[in-house]
Image (cartoon, rainbow, N blue to C red; front, side, top):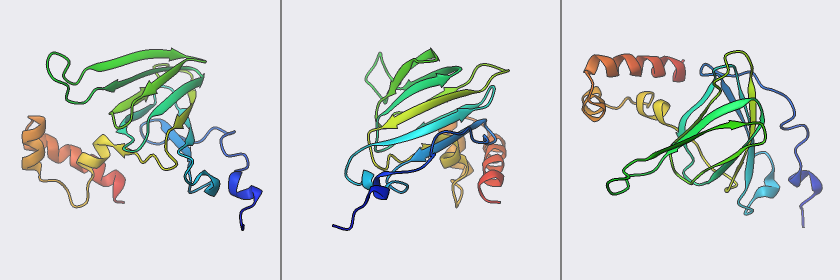
Length: 178
């Protein structure tokens, strides 16, 4: 009874390019936090801006499938299947998308987008099958956690020297905790 039109509206939410971050992307998510009327509707939308050679790094949405449409530019996109029996274990599926092309990332799978053009930005719109899809950026979660995951654990998991893990953790710790 208290609902009004503003509960279903967000003015000029996705019309302007945004400044990109260190890896060359900016995700402007419109979910239930910005539009309360999305509550229980199972959808959200995002604008993703990519600098030249920018990326939306490997990440996953634990609660949503994503369908991405390129509005401007070119994107190299892909996802990895999850622990399938041999011979298809962790199969990598990818495509190069141009303006107007559409690609789907199934719920929970690690995926990315990369603008291969060194001179022009790219823009995409993503629709997600959840009012609050969540996002887990893999490198940030693994190397930038607080407290840090033991370098012994990560060195063994990634099969690299501990000093490599220490270096990676330092990169993400500085970015996430300053």
